[in-house]
Image 1 (spheres, rainbow, N blue to C red):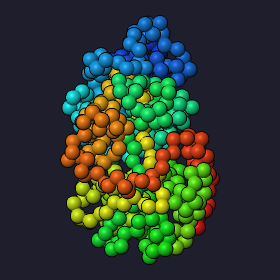
Image 2 (cartoon, helix red, strand yellow):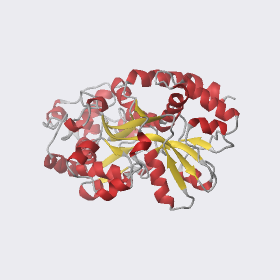
Image 3 (cartoon, rainbow, N blue to C red):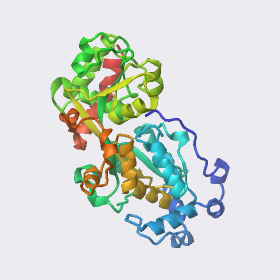
Image 4 (cartoon, rainbow, N blue to C red):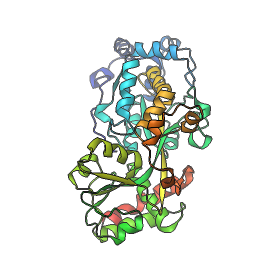
Length: 400
């Protein structure tokens, strides 16, 4: 996800140089919570005053917090700052809209296209100038955010519905949905769509195959390379065969540097996109045959990738942030992900309770396409794969 930036200015640089007392007065006038102030002052190397500390909300912010408390306090805070929520991604347009209608306004458009790495960078900057309440990052970035001290725990009301391997035991991050790598094929250009990674190498697909950004930065692209490794070597223990695959694809001139965005797919600059299934299915519906798209799960290897929700440790709107978490894990929020073809983390619970509409289930790809999909929830494997990719992608793929 390439996501444009337009920073929210909580305080100007001249304000930050004023006295601590004046700083507290100005921040209070802006409606910034004492929770965020205490975190900010600590990040700046000081400690909140006794007055500020005594004003910190008494509620246990690790959750769950009852909805009325969240709603009341979120409305006092006035808005939610969301980092990394592109509207076209996993039906976020509807999810963001329903949150705004029910609760408070969401600021998200400026930084909607941020990659997972950029989201964490925004949280780092928030330590000095509080900005950004919640993020949506690839699975391996959840534990990374914990080690960097950027996020704070919150266990939502439906926490027990989420499988243990898809959440942090201490509540720091939790999977909201997952997708799996697919081929999104422009059939107006590609008359015989490939069904495997092997076919991408053997076929005449000059400058047609693209991924969703830089795999060192974007989780979608990272899992595309990892899936190619699974397809060519059959192993999740080594991503190098995936790097070798894309090096061969580039040498054959089948790999294009163009990102597999809906714009590039529409223009035909990427005729075969390797990306999340839910993105491709959403693009198919959005484009309505202009061009015609076909979404296929590669038969020789595809990895499922969970995305996880995180709350900024220095969130300027801590209650609005936690209200967001409750919203996306509610029945409504989870079904909204499914409408966008993302697999909600509570899917099995919703099915068992008879809450998934039949017409919605009918729009999903056939279950047999997912027979060989693999999950990678071992963060050590993900870290090892990321390390190898970071070392070799530039020299072995882009440097050719």
